[in-house]
Image (cartoon, rainbow, N blue to C red):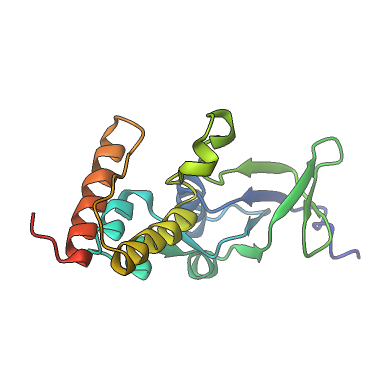
Amino acid sequence: MDKSQPAPHTKQLLLIGGGHSHLSVIKQLGMQPIAGLQVTVISKDIHTPYSGMVPGMIAGHYTHNDAHIDLRKLCEVSGISLIHDQVTGIDPEQQRVFCAQRPSLPYHWLSINIGSQPALKNISGAESTGTAVKPISTFISHWQTVLETCRINPQPRTIAIVGGGAASVEVALACQFQAQKELGVNS
């Protein structure tokens, strides 16, 4: 039997990404598996950030491990397969998903939950002067670079946060808190 094909009595559910919705599905299916359903998660990230904790991570209240979910461990305890790879294409007619490092995978049902990623290219000048908060790993890396630049060359700087929702306010306050703490500035 071709191992890339599911057994005839098995239906294959592929979950692309480790976003919040998929984390809930993984947990629920781990607690109440469905007979005849084989579930596989494909994710380029093994540690997925919990976005509600990002402001606290920016402010230095939480570590990377505190604010990230170990997708490998969650899948393992839930009895769900995990493939650490990047999806490069989907063929809905053939019901196949293509990955960068492995053969294509068949599916009966497919769900995509990779998190939001703002389209900076649609905003003139945003790519050259801004950094989106999502993907979170890219933002955190950039934020650490900003803090290091401020340590090396301490001078007044302006940081603008685009957005007016609660998350934007939390990110702005977290950035201010951490910058003042790192640079030894009293509020």
